[in-house]
Image 1 (tube, rainbow, N blue to C red):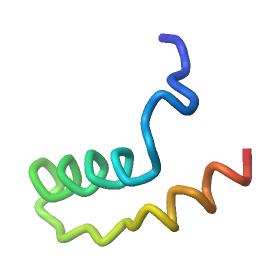
Image 2 (image 1 turned 90 degrees about the horizontal axis):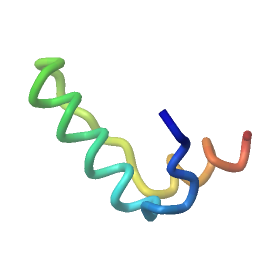
Image 3 (image 1 turned 60 degrees about the vertical axis):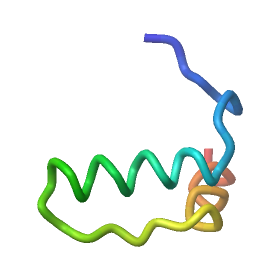
Image 4 (image 1 turned 180 degrees about the horizontal axis):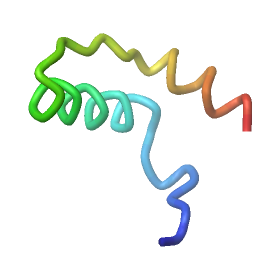
Length: 43
């Protein structure tokens, strides 16, 4: 599967990650766009 890179904004990635975690992980997720930006900077 190809990488999406910057196809999605930090806010969009955070929203999807929070939704998936809450919907399928039965946990509350509080990932913020700032968190995503920090993780992307580590690449």
